[in-house]
Image (cartoon, rainbow, N blue to C red; front, side):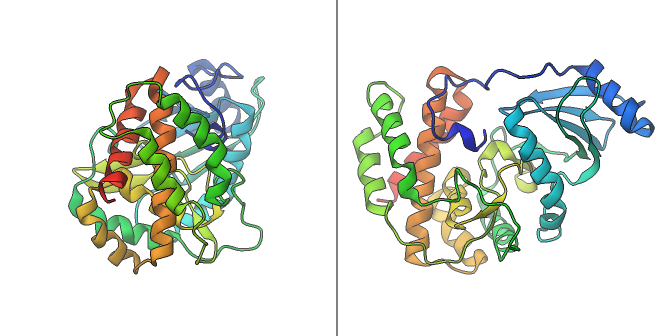
Length: 306
């Protein structure tokens, strides 16, 4: 799920594709632009909110935008992910070949390294991996050059999300979504942190670190995918993933490995966790409960600390 979903209520399903993508098209693009790769086995993997992924042979993947808005995100990954890959010790889908529009397909596309493992929403990380995740974030976060992209949907103050969250809370308040507390309690927790001043300089962030965008291997973090929202933002945005991934009793290990965080940064991270938990839970109301399960657990972990 990417940034433009934040502001609107969805029906829990990916938006309709704006261009048909099938194996024949992918094979045609490869043959025309990267013929040395075109004879490798090709297998459909998934449709996301913005991209379609095919596995190419054993070691590669083809990633193609299915909506115009995603074309810019692919170009962002092509430009900046090789830079960020040098900062982190976990695998990322590094660019192998850049594809151009062709065969009637209108957008840029990528051939990237395939990352072996299982999505973390299917096989959670072991709690003992909290420190390793903290080190990953510490390596990623840091100063970015002046021309680095800014995330216009998430590289913003928490307060800017209040209106869209209010709409979601109003809807969730009318439904039985399996929470162990009232939605009003989430509103109250949000009100306590929403105006916390930012006490860190903005730096590199992934900006979409929910479990579907992480790859695990036997309980350890093996890779991080879907970097289309990468950009400069408050690092607390990524720190919110602590509540999506780990029980609260190991968060101290994550913060220590990160290098410590201030009370203000912790408050903003909790606010972003409330945001992501609400969005994921609301998205699942009319769609797959995978999002709902992540959102529900995230909110329960945040609220359980109160």
